[in-house]
Every structure is written in structure tokens, then in C-alpha cells.
Image (cartoon, rainbow, N blue to C red; front, top):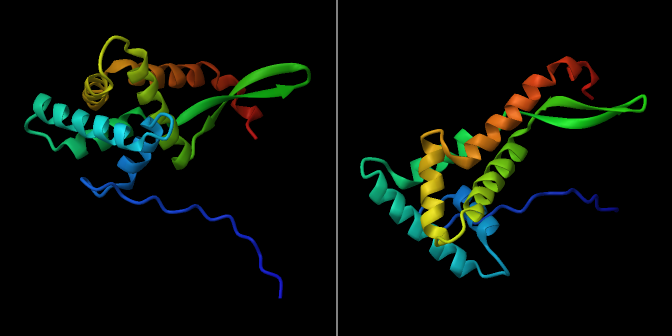
Length: 157
């Protein structure tokens, strides 16, 4: 009997404070050089700062809403047709939306130099919650680029 190999994604364990797998994924992306305890501490301190900045809101709700606000619904991909390369707008699946959202938030946080990570993470999450900030700007630029190249959508795979 031959066993078939099926590629299954391992389930991520939820974090200890919020019991959320999205938080676990975010902490893993925030982590540098395998120092998960440092990344976890920075994330939880950022959540405490979010709680202070928005006292009427649940910090987990602010975090998930910020990630959802930054998610792109469409992106451009390069497609080569007859010697010319076109930027073709394509829809983004759920997993990639989440990955891009997390990546753009962390890119914005790491772009703010001269401040502790927890402070800049809290500021970026609050800004994304309010549909502002560098991560939202990145999302708007991607959507604008897709809208500008709508004429090439017939080249979509």
C-alpha cells in the first residue's frame, strides 16, 4: 500500500493572552533571529499602549480590525505577452491578503527609526484601525495601481 503525501498546513497554536492564531502568526513575523520571547513581549507591550490610546476599545479588536483594514482585495502581477510586460490586476486570495497585511504593517513599523518597536507598532495599529498610516498608504497605492491598469485585465490568467 502506497501512502499518498498530502501537503497539510500545520495549525498554529494560539497565543497565551488573547487565544488568537492571528496574533501568533503576527508575533512569528515580528520575531528576529528566533527570539520569540522578545517579539511576544514587544507585541503585548504594544497592545497595552493601544489600550491606553483607545480606552473604549478592546485591543484585540483594534488589532484584528487594523489587519483587516490593510488587507488588499486586488493587486497587480506582471504578465509577459508578445515581448511586452503588462501589469495585470488580479484578485488576492485570503491567505495572501493576510500575509501582505502583516508584512506591510511590520514594514511600516520597522521604517519608523529612533523609537522602540512596541511604541511604533502601537501607533501603526491605531493608525491602521483609523484607516490612516503607512500601511494603509501602501494598500491604497496597490489599489490605485490596479485601477490604473484595469485596461489589461483581459490578460489575467
